Amino acid sequence: MKDKKPNYPFLWFTKITGLPLLAYFKTKIYCEGGDMTLRHPKKPCIIMSNHTSLFDFALHLALFYFRTVRFLMAEVLFDGRPVLSRFLYAMGGIRVDRDAYDFSFVGKALDILDRGGTVGVFPEGRLPRGEKNLPFKPGIVYIALRTDAPIIPVCIDGNYGLFKRTHVLFGKEINIRDWCTSENPSDKEIGEITEKLKARMDEMKRELERLKNAK
Image 1 (cartoon, rainbow, N blue to C red):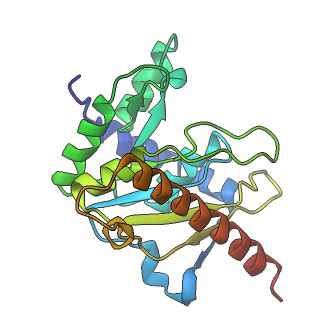
Image 2 (image 1 turned 135 degrees about the horizontal axis):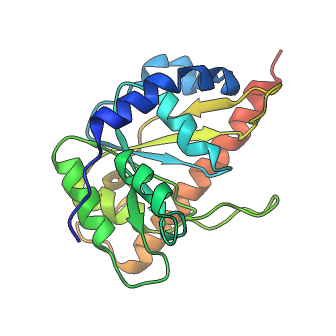
């Protein structure tokens, strides 16, 4: 399936007119080791974020205001929702059918990264229910291996609300090849690397809570 390019005039119109919404997040940003350059990763790269709410996508528009992050998005946001689907495609969304053996989204992500772009991934693939943590899907590992693009971990606390403040932690980039024992990792090793990515995000969640509670 051919990639549906973002409608850049519409995308920037949405960003500009949505500026007042940024006050809703009142975002507090932290970077590991106090290195604030981490929030401005070089291209191409893969943004890896935990998933807490439907607001996550809007928050990332604010975090990466001056670049277009092409996020992988579940089919449930597109199917039977013509208005929403047009909006998401216009904003650069890449449709992923989680229940079909259609991996065209991988090719689209590779093409974007090969052209120096930025791809966003919520590796959990869906919103968690309650406090339960969901396993990570391996798609992000396949994309990183095929492109050698670094993964930029971004942890958000999902503390959205009018009288609340959203907290975000940017982590150091991850080069998947550093975790591989061979040029062509087996499915077993890819599964192990996927688990390492989840463990890394869990570590960042704990660090973000520590930073929030620090005096």
